[in-house]
Image (cartoon, helix red, strand yellow):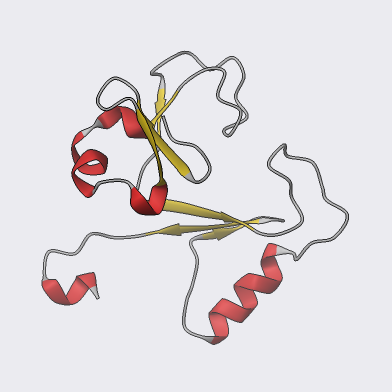
Length: 116
């Protein structure tokens, strides 16, 4: 499964990696790295059926400071609308913004130019 900053591949390697250090081959070939499992605290779905839901690696959500990992408001924070406004001034337009979440959809281009 996937943690907030961690990737676990128990049936393939038995190892847990920092997301930035996870082997590309693992992330691109092992579907279980993207599956949500019951009992994993990072996703907040306590009773989700096993193997019922999978993360989409082209959809990325950023949780702005102010919302805790447990879904509770923290004492201080930065509203996502403020971050979105700043990003917009720099030509970055998110797909969706809620109170403390900013979502981006990355499109896979067919040409090298579309990959940036």
